[in-house]
Image 1 (cartoon, rainbow, N blue to C red):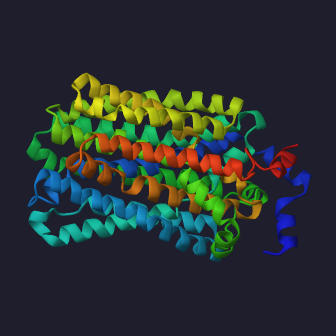
Image 2 (image 1 turned 60 degrees about the vertical axis):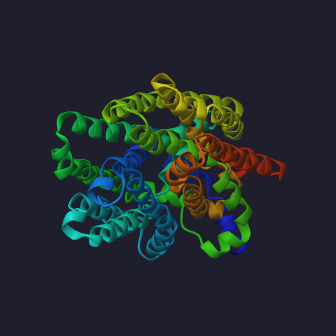
Image 3 (image 1 turned 90 degrees about the vertical axis):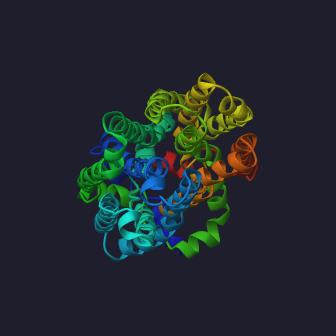
Length: 450
């Protein structure tokens, strides 16, 4: 990157910023961001819950219920491996064509692979071919999600008022609890109103059809934003354009590593109170699965106001400080994991509700907590790669690892696993601060906002 390029990217004419920002409000950007995130997390949780409720019987009927869930979790992880590869491919597509083209292709692929799962015959019809097809479709989902990055979340944070950036940073994260609520409610409804045979014959396919429909809505909602001249100009003005990945890694490798580890506590907890908890309830308790889903639904509802409160706290004390405090609380919570999981029904429900509450507080600020350390020119690609690596390291194998630890070593080791995520978060935040990286958004952004 030449110095003139960096200078022009970092210091656009002040009047251009004022002209465009007057027409694009944070509220308008929020709509597209939330719709896009709900779509992504709906797809995410439909597959995740199906790994516990559906695939062990439909795709792996030859295995025990426990082994079937293990195999399903292995396929679940494929999307997180494919996601960085998809990001690299779609970055090239965006540079060659446009952001709108990239988003259209990515969401079309995501919708196609999701619908493909809905129509997938079971093992009884295809044999091993059903397993291979599910793995290919899951890999395709992850590859497509890598291309769904549109920069709107970063644009929202950069366009937010200086005093409310923590609050606006929490808005994109609402997609996680809302997406889970929709999926859990849909599966709970099907389980309570269909016979077991009806559910495994055809009922389980409906959530994947719904996911496809939501993808279509999300595509048009997001395209409506990113392809308009006003938004395209503002995205370019904020330097939310692809930069060379090789150059990014060479000059900003430390920031990438710290950014990937900073959200580990949130991402590990993310899976422990959703997908892993459901597998634990199904395998080792006598609770009704539908009832347990309703409890998780309540927990996700608790997470929503916690996210808004977290935004207020972050605006007062800083995003990193907020994430660090709740990283400590997650570490404390991890010590109670064996007590709550080995206890009775009340303890199990408490584990879910408290976990979702902590998830709301931490996840609201987890995305991009140290992304302010990226130079302006690398912000868009840096945030993308950091997100991919964070999900891969902290979330991709979390259900599989947690279930294996609980079965073969005991649930106490699940607590240690969660504790390791908290240690990773606190370590990354401490190193980034000790290394002199900026605590909030770069000063150049403050200058632009004036």
